Length: 382
Image (cartoon, rainbow, N blue to C red; front, top):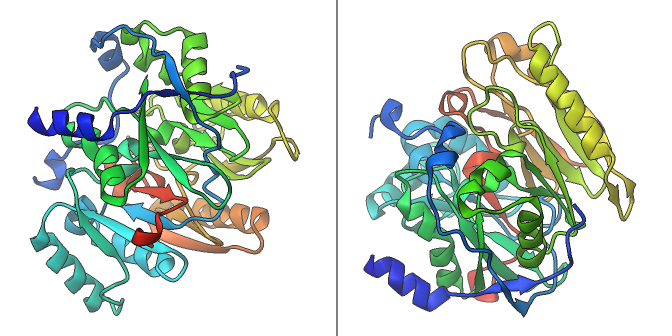
């Protein structure tokens, strides 16, 4: 409680007025996602925040320039070292790589792992911060950029996963470490369920409504907060996948350009319900305008989930001309190759790098889930 109070005093900030919206053992570690019934029983203060200050700017798209990529190295080092090494090898020459760890002993182990795989000891800058969860996308901050070259202002939100209290402190810790301005949006969600094209468009799933029922918010109030605090001007809320536990947009969608998105596609013979869900989502997203014309939606095959593991090819990492794409092997080899071909066609000047995510799939996530993009760093942190 004392740590929470100190963080509140150091980093407290109000909502900001913006444009109005138009619309252990690995098996014992927490998995990614929870049932919808969790949100309905979770009680929070029923308050609609009042904007207190004007903030201008936008959250950039992940396909735009990145100052750094943060990786949840903590659990990755312990349980998914092969995937971690592949990620670092693909990223460290493209952008600064920051690794979240839980102890100095883990730093020593991490550097030894890098050296053993012929990577420089300084390929990753490691930080001991208050979280033991690798799902940094879900509790990491959002960055509102005043211009394409910065500076950036951090916006935090309510991260409501059970038994991950330290994750709720992460954004304040990150802001305090590097000296960012900091504010908090009184909205409950996870970061994997908010995508943007860098042009004012916000993409989420409808689970955002369920998560904020305990606050008493209706659709308009959620939209106002997305506009006031995150500077979005348009909001496309899509249907979550039927049966997929995280309910996140990044499990079936990614935005790879101002007017270019990718949405998964299921074979109706294999999964008729979700084939229809994703067809509807593609049609919904295509109705959105951008400064470069209507949103163009490409489709990508979705991997098999008959064993209960929800694999995805849209849970990717963008890093300054390189895109990291999940691969699963086994019965998905042909779809693995087809997914890489989709991105090579859409991003012909980019390096498209295959990353083994077969063990991550067991924990209900992939590459986007265990990373977050940092578009701007203060000079002292560069």
